[in-house]
Length: 305
Image (cartoon, rainbow, N blue to C red; front, side):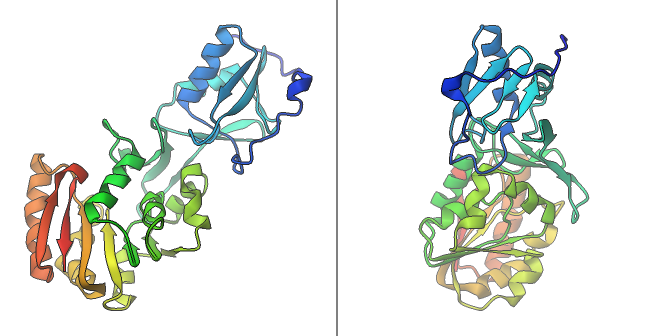
């Protein structure tokens, strides 16, 4: 790897200064895809590249210099640092004080590693190395859209039992009157704050967030209040209580008459998913739901009160 002295050229006058886009209210974020694109365009002899620094939401110009890149906010990175980012496909990097910082943490509730993983569109969250969204032949945003479609649509008051990166709450809030979302892990919310796709989670007045255990929080919520529950819990091995008959009975209690609950399970055609489907369906009916409908395209079921 070649090394460069950190002497930064002034960008061309027509681009001086490179003013950050109004959409870039957060610090620039680079992924392996963006880093590789910058490396490729520099090797092609280009002096400027149009790329995204907010995970695909918008694009802006980046100056390519012999020493490295100059970002719109005045920060710079060396080509060695770009090469290192291009080799890390499971982590997004936030640029601060001219250095790439991986967006990751250790969970306080689970003690598992967490990191923001880039995809072709909205990033996903890796928990203990496992993605919290479907990413094979689909991106996390599309995955969330399918869950909303399978639920029959969000209206009235909506309960989201596992905030994660907030995509479910954000999309539900587009049509619902109010959304209450629950997250047990503080570190997840800190990662969400650094994710441009999660911005509305913290800015939309229709969304109210509670930090706590959904199994405990739901017991404090009013009866017959919610029109829809969106239940996308961690795996059974990590949160078995969120698959329990007691939790399902609380879901029935807080739902209004003819209220619905979409319950994400996983691939219903897989051996593990088929087994979980049978046990979940039985417990949902025992808890008081009148019907449980399979929604294989959304990897879950729809339970109706």
